[in-house]
Amino acid sequence: MLLGICASLLLASPASAAFTAPELFVRLQRADITHEPASDWMPLAAAPRLDYIGGFQIGYRLQPTGVNGNFQTAALSITGVPDGQPTQPSNTPPYCVGKNGTEGTITPVGSEIQFEGDGTYSFSVSLGNTTGTGCVGGPATTAASFTVDVHVAPQLAGEPLAFRAKPLPGDPFVGIRAADPPGGYGDNSCALDATVQPDGSVTGQRVVPDDPEPPRQTVITFPEPGNWACVSRGVVEGVNDSFERTFLGTPWSAPLRFEVHSDFRRVRTTIIGPRKTRPTFDVKAEFPSASAGGKATLKFVRFVRCRRSGYLFKKVANYKGAFDAKGHAKFRVKRPRKTPLGYYAATVSFRGTHFVRAGTDPSLILLAATKRAIKFVKPRNYPRC
Image (cartoon, rainbow, N blue to C red; front, side, top):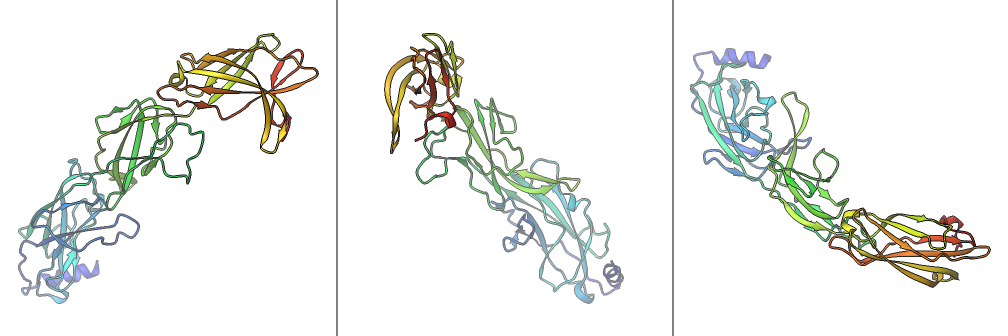
């Protein structure tokens, strides 16, 4: 402040030079904690088009003032942003800040302009010889603009499954990701049976990731099979008008639509009438609507003995069934009658539907039968091999 007051007194002398409309420049700024320059100065005379979302620093070429240190003041005024409502609290209101330096040197003016979406950013820079707001809007003022044009698109890698029974060799990335735009991060959102919102985001029966906080750079979990759509954008961290942390982003991309399938898996098995001669095994599929109409086989086997590779079973019988609209398949089996106790197991094989692939449920149904009933057995109580 003392420097500014002393310089203002010096500028008030008859030796002060008249200012002309300043020559303006822009450079890219990192949006991380360093806020360091990310490019050289670029002239604004040609209204450049920039592929960058980190932030932007405006500069001007110092003019001669005829006073010690070549002191002068400059102010940056933001006049337009893509959404029409500038969120630039560090530059509101514009303020005349003192500058010292060699004539012809390019020096920053005002605070960094933060990214506010794709489109045109317009502003003006005013020069003067007073601090406060005295230099704003004077005759030594130049208006300029630049345009930001950044696009981010989702990329599908591999074939996502809602449930994968066997891991892929090498554990490759499978899912949705978007390349980080220059200066920022990719952000993705996906929805099942998606509807595109007016702002370009998607909503639907399920939305992933669950975390609303960007950046969500990848999506690897699709909790249900079906028709999915994903959109992407670029985001960068900034501040709102209250200087609170927020994220600012590019427009959402066009939706990428694809199908997610699943391997078969049961979630529950119930024995109806375990003491009956013909008890019913009620098997529920993990994804009822996607499994509806699919045919299945319950394979019933008897434990014989252990061997090096695991259990040795002997086939007892196969029973056919189909999954209904609620995801249930019922198999009426002939109950084995053992004295005092016999160990059995069952597997459920699925023939497939459009969204659920053919295959066998990866978990054995462990059973024990006596002369009076059949029941489930916990793994710790089953013969160990």
